[in-house]
Image: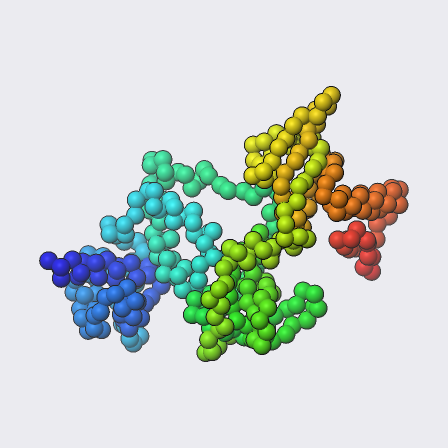
Length: 361
């Protein structure tokens, strides 16, 4: 009975591993993937399974025009053993876009048949309520979302493989600060997706300090045979909490004290800025007093800047100074250009982050 059960599970694994057309997988590659899943089977036995037992009921196509033989599932065939139901198909369909730049390419390739099956499954169901969910539900970011930076498929494949196999990576990297490219040998440690950019956390060969490399600025990547530097004590959550990606001005949290517009007070009552937050009405005013424990980082400060005249900050003092400096720059800028009309503008204006303006002729 145990042997029969093992054979059944092996058949299921085979069906999951064979890609739908136009994808193909060779017999040796299929054998290796089965071995990774704990199934030991010879090449000839595997071919007999495919030809004699599985090919007809599950529409498996053998491509005999190349050696070793390659196998595909007929994309139009409706396999009853795909393990899908409306709920799991919906979850797979919604997860595909989110996981595309988080999972290694090798894993995404393995999951590709499941993603395709989920899409076909949902498209074939018109009356099931869950099948309609994907057409009716969307997740949108809070604030202006930038389009994701384009990443070379070959670069992503090398980077993800280097992380999985803990191997060194040789890259040609475009430096944002210097504006030039440089060949670097990297020891990958982790991967972080932040807003519209994916960063490789790694150290340069010969150095121990960790740096961040935007994947879209890696122009070429080569997987090396040498093992990467292994950091047994590295903890990604602790690393992020240390402020590695948030430009922290201090490791300690600070108390934010500010007066806020009633609409902002309503927003923060529903979606708090901090777990330690208090909002109280100001006597004789529609405004409210906000007190919250927040990280002293650039990201929080940028969020506060975005509230414009709907907030007045009293503490911490370093942020009060930054608000005052920013307000003065904006006042000076718009006052000095108050009479400037659109018609009188030069062909191209380049605005920099410090609110200065450069004319390009």
